Image (tube, rainbow, N blue to C red; front, side, top):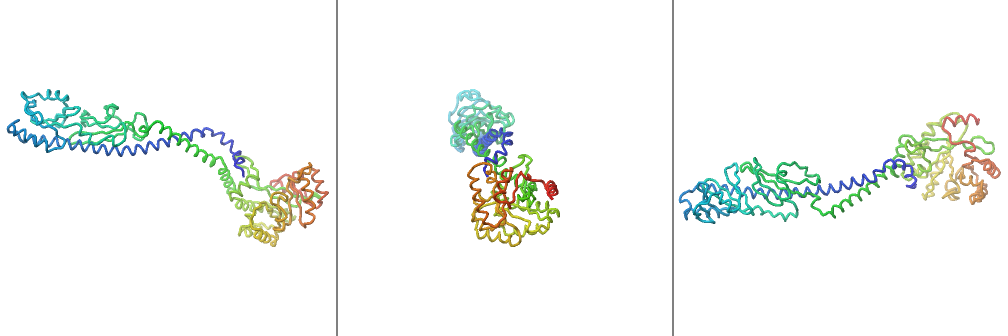
Length: 532
């Protein structure tokens, strides 16, 4: 069965869905890009969480060291800024990893530090802040913190400690191979920023602290974030990635991903069309028609050419699909053979034929019924028992049933001969269909030993013109005289054809539109009544 033929049945359906030629590939393209984005975002969130945990742990360590160092330094207040006090503060400074300077404060003035020594006169805390280019920020826990590019100063009571901002870079951003990553340490309640690190300049801080994100969506202004807070220090750390997922990729890679997605979409579209509008769809429709008894028989009379009286009928399968309309048997029978549905079709068809012809008017008159049987069905182990059970149920005589062998194959000749003879011994008649075409030749006559030979309609219709088929027909007439079989000519449509056949084979049987078209059961019995 040609796929072109099947597709022609569905062209009107495809015409209604032309939009899928672009919509499906586009949707698949978007899905591929989104899937890649999802994978990248999932990976980046893991990296972001790891980075945030490390940064937050560093912030907590710094907070703990500042808190502990100030508490210890405040516990000893003798010999304020003396050499022994400076040595004590030096010991405090070296006891902690992140503390880079420790000093004393008296009435809001810095009196001394380990690094600067004694300050004479003492420097106001604000002046000390200006000296280090720092800005004072008050925190709720009573500590004073000054935001600086390098040094951060905390004070409480009589102690001031300094921390280097560079400690926040212990977690190397570049090692993550991501662009647009940074973080903000801020006061949990007031939202005041304590420290910024990474690529903070590329994002508005206020929007970062208040914005809700849909992390998985590849939106241009979207970003990834990971947030952690500590109630003891009343601080939060948010780390972010402002170029998530596919925005980390070069434009070339994004376009390449889109092309891959579009190509996958085209492949999916091809499979989709084949499934819904191609040969697979036709096979499913055929299977549905068989299962729901939508394939029905019509009956074309076979007449004795010598007197015009009906000799029997040939049961022909017909299928009218709601969407495709009337489908030629040449197409759906071939499709059934290719898709291994022919056996189910044949069995259901036989049941319907025997039921239609279970009428004394037909049975008692001795009319024959010809049923097309594929060799693959004939060779099934249980087919003989099946047809016997149906025949007995409807009281059809075996001699009135003609099995027309329609399929030619390279099956084992001995096996085919044995199965055919089993039916012949039971009284069934064997007909060799389409004689003169394809593989129907003398070998098949010897194999099946048929009771009847049917001459294909292409030879009958060649009678009206001088063609090679007409010359072949002359040879067939001479050959058939040597066989003791009934001869049936198909496709007789004109009186010229009838006269030609009668002159050479007066005992022949014929069927064709000259006598009657295929008839529904009710019309068949009307024909029988007129014929009788």
